[in-house]
Image (cartoon, rainbow, N blue to C red; front, side, top):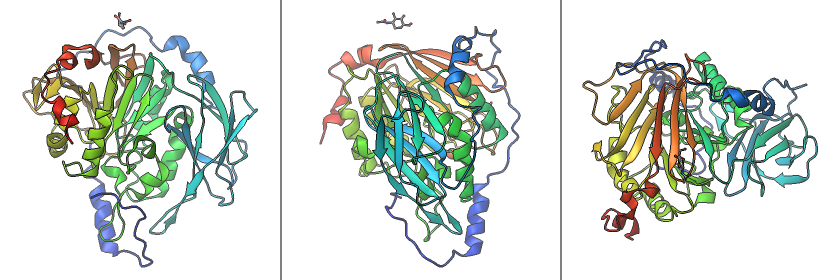
Length: 466
Ligand SMILES: *[C@@H]1O[C@H](CO)[C@@H](O)[C@H](O)[C@H]1NC(C)=O
Ligand SMILES: [Fe+2]
């Protein structure tokens, strides 16, 4: 099911019965949203306020309260940014007015733009829906750890973002299966209270599920966060939106959430990699081909083989359908991808694999081939961003030995990479104050471990084979 460039276009409408069926199948049985504490859960004492100190200063960086003075068809909407190769940022925005140029003016002083970049634009139609003009403008080179002010399309309100640092520490906010409910709002409110350099999203963004205007409302909902820090996303099943014989998948996702795939040597927006500070991050596609003969497999192998652990001691992977999951929801759905790709990840000593899809939180020990392995990756499932389908409450028992912590509550994660060897992972439940960390673990990079120094490692051969 490789994505096809340039969706097939036909003027006739699809059989309505088929469409209805697809819509129905997209809406799974509604689960209740009430949080259920995992059986392993012990409420910890309140943690010290970690984010409180910088909170005021941080909030002043975000233009939350800034209301757009006026909103016209030429005003930029749904602004979000993403890394576009070293020292560059892709600014994405949408205008109703087709005559608005794809330009971004920017500079390091508010209201003073010293640079201008010209970009590209696209648009798409989907059944009765026609999108606005979707602009993608790459700007740079940019300085690290610097606040930039920018304006989209030559006029309208000013936005601002901060570029990530070039060195540790690096703070990553992590959220999966976000959707656009009041639970989502709660999650986003928690995230914005905590200092972060970038946000990572392992799939299932808008839950538009064929209703294209919901992509627009999602873009508007996340703009306050996504216009201020890069959002690096990969696709989930809800991004597919394919209609048999009529629409190939990922049309809206690819048009709106263009990620740096070309910059990372990939030929598909469905998988790519990027580097930030000392982290090599790989965003994989659970819903495109991944077997040994696939383009994604070949690209992943080449990408892993290129990693220089001295430059990027941390290797992190995000994908949608989890490989280690002890919730009954979506049990086994990641198995075939794991069978194909886990040996590559093991050979490359990947540190952390973050997945979504299951609407609950779970953290596993370092694992490989279904069991605990000190040279395997730490697996985290964090599909509890707040989508309309609710939480996944039922767990397999007894709990697998590799599972450390599991709980069905809405929340988000924070990965603070302290230095080349130590990272601090925390999971924050929406029911608590943001500074409260419900799950908490120090993770040591495999870069400094005996796993890599062992030159006789036979799996290493996999990466080097033609
Ligand atoms: C990395 O950070 C950890 C945790 O703060 C600390 O114990 C360790 O000494 C640091 N390592 C280096 C080389 O600074
Ligand atoms: Fe999903």
